[in-house]
Length: 142
Image (tube, rainbow, N blue to C red):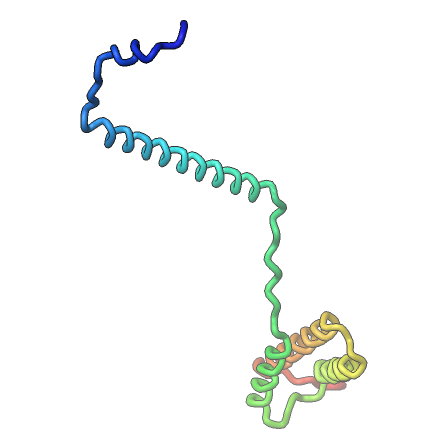
């Protein structure tokens, strides 16, 4: 089809659009834009969810226990139950050995894991001493 000439274009009827046409066009364009934004947001959420599902799960670090503070609390409890200190016996001897090992560990600059193990052993021994004292157990030698 050949292009229209100026004369043919002038011969076309005049068109006067409805005054409400432009607001409808703008409203429709805004709706389409909002749909595009919503679709993009859904895609981003799906991509983030898929990425999170495929990544290896990281574990939260195990809660650390303050064995040194626990040992201090048990010492205070032991001292309040028996003002003269713990009764001599195998538990008290073992506690003395752990105390010496702790002193040596600090003196040589042992790693924190080793010191924590010693503090845990000390806390467990003190807990046993407190339980024995609470139950009225005494060590006797025959």
